[in-house]
Length: 229
Image (cartoon, helix red, strand yellow):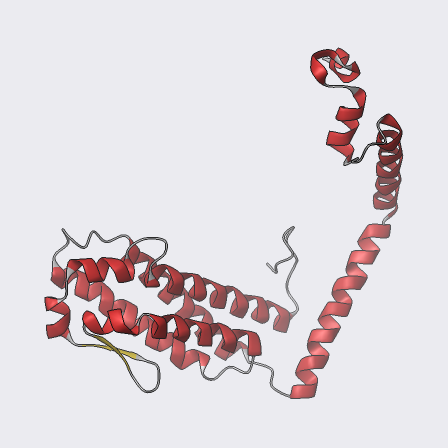
């Protein structure tokens, strides 16, 4: 109701303007009307195309900086390598999420082992594809992923999973079959588990590789969140 704008129910004109046009502070309606005027000024700038030009100029500069950085280093990643990283990261994300959904006290251990072996295989493939990258940010994500494994090494060993010298994983099937359900659950079940953390890192690596591929081809747009699509 329009009468609400003028104070009925404790919702006055100042409150209305503060809510819809971002006015803050103790200036009351004066600040509110000033914010309204500013908002209409912004609207005129949007309609005139000033904002659009500014955004295009910003992203053109960002793209130029990215290209100059690559040009100086001479280490641009090919789309072939990026595609391998993207696909392996996607597979790792999916296998890690699958481990989070298992009921370790009820699921047949043979079935659990099959899912864990898929996870280990996908993890090793991700490392293999990432080692050929030159991108610092993607390499850093891969390193963070191995860090997560190292943090959980003691528990991994309890269920028969070993971190090798090259950071890949291997599974001893006999030891795994004898592992406690509680240890498997601690490693892989729930949002705070190792599997959840690896899934998150894999998702980050997937997005990074997809964004770089888009940058390489020049066929990209920015979403409302500032990410590439």
